[in-house]
Amino acid sequence: MRGRVLSAPAPVSLLALAQFLSQFGDSLFQIAFLWLLLDLTGSKSVTGLAATVSYLPPLVLGLAAGVLVDRWDRRRVLIGADLARAALLGVLALLWGLRVLTAPWLVSAAFGMATAAVMFNPSRDSLLPEIVEVGALTRANAWVQSSQQLAFLIGPLAASLIIDQRGIGAVFPAGIALFGGSMALLVAMPARAGAAGGGAAGSKAEDAAPTDPRLRPHAILAELGTGLRELWRIPPLPFLYLLTALDNLFIMGASVLGLVVLVRETIGGTAADYALAEATYGVGMVAGSLVVVRWGARWASGTLLLVGITLDGLTYLPLLACRSMTTLIPTLLVHSFAIPLITVPRATILQRIVPPHLTGRAFALLSVVVFGVTALSCGLAGVAMDHVTAPVLFAVAGALGGVTGIVGFLSPRLRRL
Image 1 (cartoon, rainbow, N blue to C red):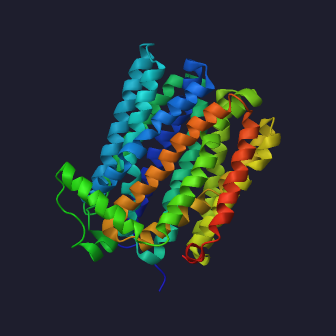
Image 2 (spheres, rainbow, N blue to C red; image 1 turned 60 degrees about the vertical axis):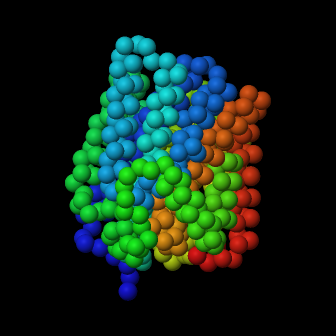
Image 3 (tube, helix red, strand yellow; image 1 turned 90 degrees about the vertical axis):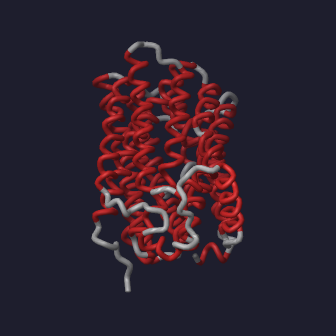
Protein backbone atom coordinates (compact mmCIF):
# COMPACT_ATOMS: atom_id res chain seq x y z
CA MET A 1 0.00 0.00 0.00
CA ARG A 2 1.29 3.45 -0.84
CA GLY A 3 2.34 5.63 2.11
CA ARG A 4 0.17 8.52 3.10
CA VAL A 5 0.30 11.36 5.59
CA LEU A 6 -1.18 10.29 8.93
CA SER A 7 -3.98 12.06 10.84
CA ALA A 8 -4.86 14.41 7.95
CA PRO A 9 -2.32 16.71 6.33
CA ALA A 10 -2.66 19.59 8.78
CA PRO A 11 0.55 18.95 10.82
CA VAL A 12 2.65 18.53 7.67
CA SER A 13 1.10 21.62 6.09
CA LEU A 14 1.74 23.70 9.20
CA LEU A 15 5.32 22.47 9.35
CA ALA A 16 5.89 23.27 5.67
CA LEU A 17 4.41 26.77 6.04
CA ALA A 18 6.43 27.44 9.18
CA GLN A 19 9.56 26.25 7.39
CA PHE A 20 8.74 28.61 4.51
CA LEU A 21 8.40 31.68 6.73
CA SER A 22 11.45 30.81 8.81
CA GLN A 23 13.63 30.26 5.75
CA PHE A 24 12.17 33.43 4.19
CA GLY A 25 13.40 35.40 7.20
CA ASP A 26 16.77 33.69 7.07
CA SER A 27 17.11 34.45 3.35
CA LEU A 28 16.47 38.15 3.95
CA PHE A 29 19.17 38.19 6.60
CA GLN A 30 21.73 36.36 4.46
CA ILE A 31 21.33 38.85 1.61
CA ALA A 32 21.91 41.77 3.98
CA PHE A 33 24.70 40.01 5.89
CA LEU A 34 27.18 39.38 3.07
CA TRP A 35 26.50 42.65 1.26
CA LEU A 36 26.87 44.72 4.43
CA LEU A 37 30.02 42.82 5.39
CA LEU A 38 31.69 43.71 2.11
CA ASP A 39 30.62 47.34 2.57
CA LEU A 40 31.85 47.48 6.17
CA THR A 41 35.16 45.67 5.68
CA GLY A 42 36.06 46.32 2.04
CA SER A 43 37.95 43.01 1.98
CA LYS A 44 37.02 39.69 0.39
CA SER A 45 39.37 37.70 2.63
CA VAL A 46 38.01 39.38 5.79
CA THR A 47 34.46 38.80 4.58
CA GLY A 48 35.30 35.16 3.93
CA LEU A 49 36.75 34.83 7.44
CA ALA A 50 33.71 36.52 8.96
CA ALA A 51 31.40 34.21 7.01
CA THR A 52 33.43 31.29 8.34
CA VAL A 53 32.90 32.43 11.93
CA SER A 54 29.16 32.68 11.35
CA TYR A 55 29.09 29.04 10.22
CA LEU A 56 30.94 27.70 13.26
CA PRO A 57 27.96 26.99 15.59
CA PRO A 58 26.98 23.76 13.79
CA LEU A 59 30.57 22.56 14.06
CA VAL A 60 30.95 23.45 17.73
CA LEU A 61 27.43 22.84 19.05
CA GLY A 62 25.74 20.63 16.46
CA LEU A 63 26.31 17.21 18.00
CA ALA A 64 25.21 18.28 21.48
CA ALA A 65 22.15 19.88 19.84
CA GLY A 66 21.29 16.49 18.37
CA VAL A 67 21.17 14.95 21.84
CA LEU A 68 18.89 17.74 23.03
CA VAL A 69 16.61 17.35 20.01
CA ASP A 70 16.26 13.65 20.88
CA ARG A 71 15.38 14.64 24.48
CA TRP A 72 13.10 17.62 24.04
CA ASP A 73 9.75 18.30 22.44
CA ARG A 74 10.81 19.02 18.85
CA ARG A 75 7.94 21.43 18.17
CA ARG A 76 8.97 23.59 21.12
CA VAL A 77 12.58 23.55 19.96
CA LEU A 78 11.45 24.94 16.60
CA ILE A 79 9.49 27.72 18.32
CA GLY A 80 12.44 28.63 20.52
CA ALA A 81 14.81 28.80 17.55
CA ASP A 82 12.49 31.19 15.70
CA LEU A 83 12.09 33.35 18.81
CA ALA A 84 15.87 33.65 19.20
CA ARG A 85 16.37 34.71 15.58
CA ALA A 86 13.61 37.31 15.78
CA ALA A 87 15.28 38.77 18.88
CA LEU A 88 18.67 38.95 17.13
CA LEU A 89 17.19 40.78 14.17
CA GLY A 90 15.58 43.18 16.62
CA VAL A 91 19.03 44.01 18.00
CA LEU A 92 20.40 44.59 14.47
CA ALA A 93 17.44 46.80 13.57
CA LEU A 94 18.10 48.93 16.66
CA LEU A 95 21.83 49.24 15.92
CA TRP A 96 21.12 50.13 12.30
CA GLY A 97 18.62 52.76 13.33
CA LEU A 98 21.16 54.29 15.73
CA ARG A 99 23.84 54.18 12.96
CA VAL A 100 26.21 52.16 15.15
CA LEU A 101 26.07 48.79 13.36
CA THR A 102 29.61 47.47 12.86
CA ALA A 103 31.11 44.31 11.35
CA PRO A 104 31.68 42.66 14.78
CA TRP A 105 28.03 43.21 15.71
CA LEU A 106 26.91 41.81 12.36
CA VAL A 107 29.11 38.73 12.63
CA SER A 108 28.00 38.15 16.24
CA ALA A 109 24.37 38.23 15.16
CA ALA A 110 25.13 35.84 12.29
CA PHE A 111 26.76 33.50 14.81
CA GLY A 112 23.60 33.62 16.91
CA MET A 113 21.35 33.06 13.89
CA ALA A 114 23.40 30.01 12.95
CA THR A 115 23.23 28.73 16.53
CA ALA A 116 19.42 28.88 16.42
CA ALA A 117 19.46 27.07 13.07
CA VAL A 118 21.54 24.30 14.71
CA MET A 119 18.47 23.52 16.81
CA PHE A 120 15.83 24.24 14.16
CA ASN A 121 17.04 22.06 11.29
CA PRO A 122 17.46 18.66 13.00
CA SER A 123 14.22 19.24 14.94
CA ARG A 124 12.33 19.81 11.68
CA ASP A 125 13.77 16.74 9.99
CA SER A 126 13.30 14.54 13.06
CA LEU A 127 9.69 15.66 13.41
CA LEU A 128 8.60 14.45 9.97
CA PRO A 129 8.84 10.67 10.64
CA GLU A 130 6.53 11.18 13.63
CA ILE A 131 3.67 12.45 11.45
CA VAL A 132 4.30 10.63 8.14
CA GLU A 133 4.34 6.94 7.21
CA VAL A 134 7.66 5.53 5.99
CA GLY A 135 6.34 5.04 2.45
CA ALA A 136 5.43 8.73 2.20
CA LEU A 137 8.71 10.15 3.48
CA THR A 138 10.21 11.00 0.09
CA ARG A 139 7.12 12.95 -0.94
CA ALA A 140 6.74 14.61 2.47
CA ASN A 141 10.41 15.63 2.51
CA ALA A 142 10.04 17.01 -1.00
CA TRP A 143 7.00 19.11 0.03
CA VAL A 144 8.67 20.49 3.16
CA GLN A 145 11.85 21.23 1.26
CA SER A 146 9.81 22.76 -1.57
CA SER A 147 8.56 25.29 0.97
CA GLN A 148 12.17 25.98 1.90
CA GLN A 149 13.20 26.37 -1.73
CA LEU A 150 10.22 28.66 -2.38
CA ALA A 151 11.56 30.86 0.41
CA PHE A 152 14.95 30.84 -1.32
CA LEU A 153 13.12 32.21 -4.37
CA ILE A 154 10.85 34.77 -2.73
CA GLY A 155 13.33 35.85 -0.04
CA PRO A 156 15.95 37.37 -2.38
CA LEU A 157 13.26 38.89 -4.63
CA ALA A 158 11.66 40.47 -1.60
CA ALA A 159 15.08 41.60 -0.38
CA SER A 160 15.72 43.24 -3.75
CA LEU A 161 12.41 45.10 -3.56
CA ILE A 162 12.90 46.09 0.09
CA ILE A 163 16.45 47.31 -0.50
CA ASP A 164 15.44 49.32 -3.57
CA GLN A 165 12.42 50.92 -1.89
CA ARG A 166 13.36 51.21 1.78
CA GLY A 167 17.11 50.58 2.06
CA ILE A 168 19.01 47.56 3.32
CA GLY A 169 18.18 48.27 6.96
CA ALA A 170 14.49 47.53 6.31
CA VAL A 171 15.41 43.85 5.86
CA PHE A 172 15.71 43.44 9.64
CA PRO A 173 12.12 44.29 10.72
CA ALA A 174 10.78 42.28 7.78
CA GLY A 175 12.68 39.25 9.05
CA ILE A 176 11.28 39.73 12.55
CA ALA A 177 7.73 39.58 11.18
CA LEU A 178 8.48 36.39 9.24
CA PHE A 179 9.97 34.56 12.21
CA GLY A 180 6.95 35.65 14.24
CA GLY A 181 4.64 34.13 11.65
CA SER A 182 6.57 30.87 11.75
CA MET A 183 6.23 30.75 15.53
CA ALA A 184 2.47 31.25 15.28
CA LEU A 185 2.10 28.31 12.89
CA LEU A 186 4.22 26.05 15.08
CA VAL A 187 2.17 27.00 18.14
CA ALA A 188 -0.93 25.96 16.17
CA MET A 189 0.47 22.45 15.60
CA PRO A 190 -0.93 19.69 17.84
CA ALA A 191 1.06 19.58 21.08
CA ARG A 192 1.69 15.84 20.69
CA ALA A 193 3.59 16.45 17.44
CA GLY A 194 7.25 16.71 18.33
CA ALA A 195 7.29 14.88 21.65
CA ALA A 196 10.40 12.70 21.76
CA GLY A 197 9.50 9.09 21.09
CA GLY A 198 5.98 9.91 19.95
CA GLY A 199 4.17 9.74 16.65
CA ALA A 200 4.18 7.18 13.88
CA ALA A 201 7.89 6.50 13.87
CA GLY A 202 8.73 7.30 17.45
CA SER A 203 6.27 4.76 18.86
CA LYS A 204 8.58 2.03 17.60
CA ALA A 205 11.35 3.14 19.91
CA GLU A 206 9.66 4.42 23.05
CA ASP A 207 11.89 2.34 25.28
CA ALA A 208 15.06 3.52 23.55
CA ALA A 209 14.30 7.24 23.43
CA PRO A 210 15.46 9.35 26.42
CA THR A 211 12.59 11.01 28.25
CA ASP A 212 14.36 13.11 30.90
CA PRO A 213 14.55 16.65 29.45
CA ARG A 214 16.85 18.01 32.18
CA LEU A 215 20.31 19.20 31.21
CA ARG A 216 23.10 17.06 32.65
CA PRO A 217 26.38 17.64 30.80
CA HIS A 218 27.81 14.23 31.61
CA ALA A 219 24.62 12.52 30.44
CA ILE A 220 24.59 14.54 27.21
CA LEU A 221 28.19 13.55 26.49
CA ALA A 222 27.44 9.91 27.25
CA GLU A 223 24.38 9.88 24.98
CA LEU A 224 26.35 11.65 22.28
CA GLY A 225 29.11 9.05 22.35
CA THR A 226 26.65 6.17 22.39
CA GLY A 227 24.67 7.67 19.53
CA LEU A 228 27.71 8.29 17.35
CA ARG A 229 28.90 4.71 17.85
CA GLU A 230 25.49 3.39 16.86
CA LEU A 231 25.37 5.63 13.78
CA TRP A 232 28.87 4.55 12.75
CA ARG A 233 27.69 0.92 12.69
CA ILE A 234 24.85 1.67 10.23
CA PRO A 235 26.13 1.11 6.68
CA PRO A 236 26.64 3.13 4.55
CA LEU A 237 26.25 6.19 6.82
CA PRO A 238 29.98 6.93 7.23
CA PHE A 239 30.44 6.99 3.44
CA LEU A 240 27.33 9.16 3.03
CA TYR A 241 28.67 11.71 5.52
CA LEU A 242 32.08 11.66 3.79
CA LEU A 243 30.54 12.38 0.38
CA THR A 244 28.49 15.20 1.92
CA ALA A 245 31.61 16.71 3.46
CA LEU A 246 33.58 16.61 0.20
CA ASP A 247 30.71 18.02 -1.87
CA ASN A 248 30.24 20.94 0.53
CA LEU A 249 33.98 21.58 0.82
CA PHE A 250 34.29 22.00 -2.94
CA ILE A 251 30.97 23.71 -3.72
CA MET A 252 29.83 25.90 -0.85
CA GLY A 253 32.62 28.48 -0.73
CA ALA A 254 31.89 29.36 -4.34
CA SER A 255 28.15 29.28 -3.72
CA VAL A 256 28.19 31.53 -0.64
CA LEU A 257 31.11 33.91 -1.16
CA GLY A 258 32.00 33.37 -4.81
CA LEU A 259 28.58 34.42 -6.01
CA VAL A 260 28.57 37.79 -4.31
CA VAL A 261 32.09 38.51 -5.65
CA LEU A 262 31.10 37.31 -9.13
CA VAL A 263 28.09 39.65 -9.24
CA ARG A 264 29.83 42.58 -7.57
CA GLU A 265 33.24 42.53 -9.28
CA THR A 266 33.22 40.31 -12.38
CA ILE A 267 29.80 41.43 -13.62
CA GLY A 268 29.73 44.85 -11.93
CA GLY A 269 26.23 44.32 -10.57
CA THR A 270 24.30 45.85 -7.69
CA ALA A 271 22.80 44.48 -4.48
CA ALA A 272 19.54 43.99 -6.40
CA ASP A 273 21.41 41.92 -9.02
CA TYR A 274 22.87 39.76 -6.27
CA ALA A 275 19.41 39.28 -4.78
CA LEU A 276 18.12 38.29 -8.24
CA ALA A 277 20.91 35.71 -8.57
CA GLU A 278 20.03 34.26 -5.17
CA ALA A 279 16.36 34.20 -6.17
CA THR A 280 17.29 32.14 -9.22
CA TYR A 281 18.47 29.43 -6.85
CA GLY A 282 14.97 29.37 -5.42
CA VAL A 283 13.34 28.93 -8.86
CA GLY A 284 15.57 25.99 -9.74
CA MET A 285 15.21 24.33 -6.35
CA VAL A 286 11.42 24.63 -6.35
CA ALA A 287 11.35 23.05 -9.82
CA GLY A 288 13.71 20.28 -8.73
CA SER A 289 11.67 19.60 -5.59
CA LEU A 290 8.45 19.33 -7.58
CA VAL A 291 10.11 16.83 -9.92
CA VAL A 292 11.11 14.77 -6.88
CA VAL A 293 7.54 14.99 -5.55
CA ARG A 294 6.22 13.63 -8.84
CA TRP A 295 8.86 11.07 -9.85
CA GLY A 296 11.37 10.74 -6.99
CA ALA A 297 9.84 7.54 -5.58
CA ARG A 298 10.61 5.73 -8.85
CA TRP A 299 14.34 6.02 -8.22
CA ALA A 300 16.44 4.49 -5.46
CA SER A 301 17.16 7.32 -3.04
CA GLY A 302 20.88 6.57 -3.13
CA THR A 303 21.06 6.75 -6.92
CA LEU A 304 19.11 10.01 -6.96
CA LEU A 305 21.48 11.44 -4.36
CA LEU A 306 24.60 10.55 -6.35
CA VAL A 307 23.16 11.98 -9.56
CA GLY A 308 22.47 15.19 -7.64
CA ILE A 309 26.00 15.45 -6.22
CA THR A 310 27.52 14.91 -9.66
CA LEU A 311 25.32 17.57 -11.27
CA ASP A 312 25.91 19.91 -8.33
CA GLY A 313 29.53 20.12 -9.43
CA LEU A 314 29.39 19.84 -13.19
CA THR A 315 26.77 22.57 -13.59
CA TYR A 316 29.23 25.13 -12.17
CA LEU A 317 31.70 24.65 -15.04
CA PRO A 318 29.95 27.10 -17.46
CA LEU A 319 30.52 29.93 -14.96
CA LEU A 320 34.15 30.02 -16.06
CA ALA A 321 32.96 32.06 -19.06
CA CYS A 322 30.37 34.12 -17.15
CA ARG A 323 30.65 37.90 -17.55
CA SER A 324 27.01 39.04 -17.47
CA MET A 325 23.72 38.46 -15.67
CA THR A 326 22.25 37.01 -18.88
CA THR A 327 24.79 34.18 -18.64
CA LEU A 328 24.66 33.83 -14.86
CA ILE A 329 20.90 33.44 -14.42
CA PRO A 330 20.30 30.41 -16.72
CA THR A 331 23.45 28.70 -15.43
CA LEU A 332 22.34 29.09 -11.81
CA LEU A 333 18.86 27.90 -12.78
CA VAL A 334 20.24 24.61 -14.10
CA HIS A 335 22.63 24.23 -11.18
CA SER A 336 20.00 24.84 -8.52
CA PHE A 337 17.64 22.30 -10.11
CA ALA A 338 20.06 19.58 -8.97
CA ILE A 339 20.15 20.64 -5.30
CA PRO A 340 16.87 18.92 -4.24
CA LEU A 341 18.20 15.76 -5.88
CA ILE A 342 20.70 15.82 -3.01
CA THR A 343 18.75 17.15 -0.04
CA VAL A 344 15.49 15.22 -0.42
CA PRO A 345 16.86 11.69 -0.89
CA ARG A 346 19.57 12.27 1.74
CA ALA A 347 16.94 13.17 4.35
CA THR A 348 14.81 10.21 3.29
CA ILE A 349 17.76 7.82 3.62
CA LEU A 350 18.49 9.00 7.17
CA GLN A 351 14.82 8.77 8.20
CA ARG A 352 14.54 5.25 6.81
CA ILE A 353 17.70 3.61 8.13
CA VAL A 354 18.31 5.47 11.41
CA PRO A 355 16.33 4.32 14.49
CA PRO A 356 13.84 6.98 15.64
CA HIS A 357 15.62 7.57 18.97
CA LEU A 358 18.76 8.57 17.03
CA THR A 359 17.29 10.77 14.30
CA GLY A 360 18.06 14.02 16.14
CA ARG A 361 21.71 13.06 16.43
CA ALA A 362 21.85 11.79 12.83
CA PHE A 363 20.51 15.08 11.44
CA ALA A 364 22.64 17.09 13.86
CA LEU A 365 25.73 15.26 12.61
CA LEU A 366 24.61 16.06 9.07
CA SER A 367 24.36 19.74 10.04
CA VAL A 368 27.84 19.58 11.58
CA VAL A 369 29.20 18.17 8.35
CA VAL A 370 27.31 20.58 6.07
CA PHE A 371 27.77 23.82 7.99
CA GLY A 372 31.15 23.01 9.50
CA VAL A 373 32.66 22.19 6.14
CA THR A 374 30.86 25.19 4.62
CA ALA A 375 32.66 27.40 7.15
CA LEU A 376 35.99 25.95 6.04
CA SER A 377 35.01 26.27 2.39
CA CYS A 378 34.09 29.96 2.80
CA GLY A 379 37.40 30.72 4.45
CA LEU A 380 39.33 28.95 1.71
CA ALA A 381 37.28 30.68 -0.99
CA GLY A 382 38.01 34.10 0.49
CA VAL A 383 41.74 33.41 0.47
CA ALA A 384 41.59 31.90 -3.02
CA MET A 385 39.84 34.93 -4.50
CA ASP A 386 42.69 37.15 -3.42
CA HIS A 387 44.66 35.25 -6.08
CA VAL A 388 42.15 34.01 -8.68
CA THR A 389 38.92 35.37 -10.16
CA ALA A 390 35.48 34.19 -9.12
CA PRO A 391 34.87 32.40 -12.48
CA VAL A 392 38.05 30.35 -12.01
CA LEU A 393 36.97 29.45 -8.48
CA PHE A 394 33.60 28.21 -9.76
CA ALA A 395 35.25 26.09 -12.47
CA VAL A 396 37.71 24.40 -10.09
CA ALA A 397 35.00 23.84 -7.48
CA GLY A 398 32.63 22.41 -10.07
CA ALA A 399 35.18 19.94 -11.41
CA LEU A 400 36.04 18.64 -7.93
CA GLY A 401 32.37 18.42 -6.95
CA GLY A 402 31.53 16.43 -10.07
CA VAL A 403 34.32 13.95 -9.34
CA THR A 404 32.94 13.51 -5.81
CA GLY A 405 29.57 12.36 -7.16
CA ILE A 406 31.17 9.98 -9.65
CA VAL A 407 33.26 8.40 -6.89
CA GLY A 408 30.06 7.87 -4.89
CA PHE A 409 28.73 5.52 -7.57
CA LEU A 410 31.48 3.09 -6.54
CA SER A 411 29.35 2.12 -3.50
CA PRO A 412 26.70 -0.45 -4.56
CA ARG A 413 25.11 -0.35 -1.11
CA LEU A 414 24.55 3.42 -1.29
CA ARG A 415 23.25 3.24 -4.87
CA ARG A 416 20.58 0.71 -3.89
CA LEU A 417 19.17 2.54 -0.85
